[in-house]
Length: 117
Image (cartoon, rainbow, N blue to C red):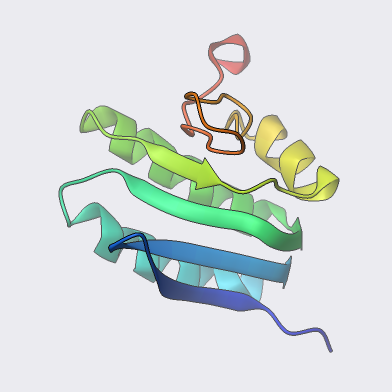
């Protein structure tokens, strides 16, 4: 069985949620808990998906819900790194655009895709 990563890492003086491996429904609860914790901080939430091989619909729903919730509070779900093709496709299907960049390569802003409603 492949190792999944769902944890906080220190980066550039802040915290970033690192997601890696094949993320499935078994990982969705932990992801949700960590995203709720991060949302309570009052700032944007950064996640690193560069180590993610794939994620299922339960994990994608957790990320979409977090993005929507943060957007309602005037904040963003910021995706860093370059997600794999499978992760990017799944996020796109859930109306999260990890490729909307804000100036520095690979730094997405996690805004929802208005074309997907």
